[in-house]
Amino acid sequence: MKDRKISFLWQDNSEVRRYRTGVCLHGHTLHSEECLSFLPRYLHRIPGVSQIVSGYQRGAQPAVDFSRAFWTPPLTPASAFQLEREQIANLDLYPQVSLTDHDNIEAGIALRAAGHTEVPISLEWTVPYRRTILHLGIHNLPPVSAQFWISAMADFTAAPEEDLLREILSGLASIPDVLIVLNHPFWLEEGVEDAGHRPALDNFLREYISKLHAFELNGTRRWVENAATIELAIAFSRPVISGGDRHACEPAACLNLTNAATVSEFAGEVRDGESPVLFMPHYRQPMELRLLEAACDILRLYPEYADRSRWIDRVFYRGDDGTAQSLAMLWKNREPWFLRPATGASQILAATHIRGALRYFFSRPAEALP
Image (tube, rainbow, N blue to C red; front, side):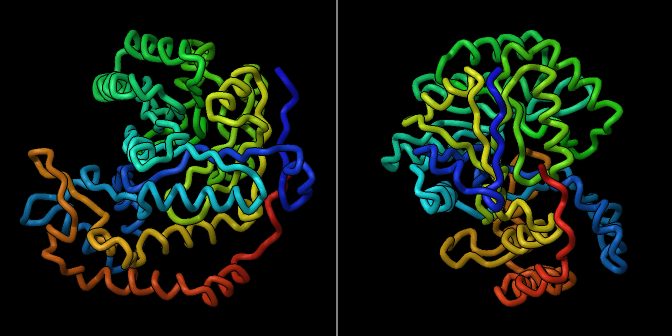
C-alpha cells in the first residue's frame, strides 16, 4: 500500500500544482430518494408542531407513515455536473465528475446522452447487511452492461441474500475499470443502532474486503469520523478516497487529485493503492452552519425548474399501491399554514448577508485537523 496523501487547501496549495485532474466522487441529484422516516423524531421537539405531527400519525384519517415519504435533491444532473466542474476548474485542474444517486444511474446516462461521454455511470448502492445498512459507491459501470448490474443490485437490496451479494461484488470487482468504495463506513442509517452496525461492518469487511478498492473520507462527516475511517483503511490495507456526498448546492468538500486522463485510468490508480485526497476550505466551516445552509438550499425556490420549483414539488409520499405523489399534488398546491413560517425563514436565511451573520454566530475554534 502506497503512502496516503491527504492535504488541506487552506494549509498549502502546492500539492494541487503537481496534478492535472481533479475528481469529484459521490454527489446526488434529483434522481436520489432521501427517506423522511427520521423527520418525526425532530419535529416532536418543536412545541406546537409536535402536536400537529402526532395528529397526522394517529388521526381519524389513515395515519401518515413517514417511512413512505421522501425528498429529492434540488439539482438536475446537468446542474450538479456543472457545479462540481466549476469548482475543480477554478483549481486549474481538468474536471472529472462521478454522480452517485441512491440505487439509480439515470444521472450518468442522461449526461452521456447529452454529449458528455466522459461521464461515468455510477451509483450509491444501498446494501442491507445483517443488522445494518451499508452504502457502496459503484463507479464507472460499463455502459453496455450497466442496466444488468443495476437490476442485480436492486434485486439484492429488495431481498438480501449473501450468495447474491458475493456474486455481484465478485463480478463487479473483476471489471478492471470499475471502482468499488465503502462510503462513510461509520454512518448509521435511520433506525440502525451502533451495537448492531459495528459487528455487521466488521463481518462484512472480513468477508468482502478483497472486493473493495477504497474507503471513503466523506465531505459531510466530522473529522473524528473520517480519522476513524483512515484507521480502518490502514487496518485493511486499503487507500482512502474522497466523497463529497453533496445533496444540495454546496460543491464537494473533498476531491481526489490525479494525473489520469480518464475515470478508467483513475480507477486503475486507486485499485493500485494511489489516491491523493484534497479537502476544500468549506470543509473547515462549522458543521452546524453547513447543515443549515443545505436545509435552506433544499427548501428554497428554484424558478429555473418550472415543474420542481417549490419544496412541495420535491417531496413525495408513496401510497398503498406503491405510487409516489408529490406533496403539491396531495395538498392541491397549498402549503399547510403551520409550515409556512419555517419555509419562509429558510428563504430569508438564504440571503447572502444573513448567511454572513450566521457564519459569525456559529464561529468557534475549528475542529482539530492534522
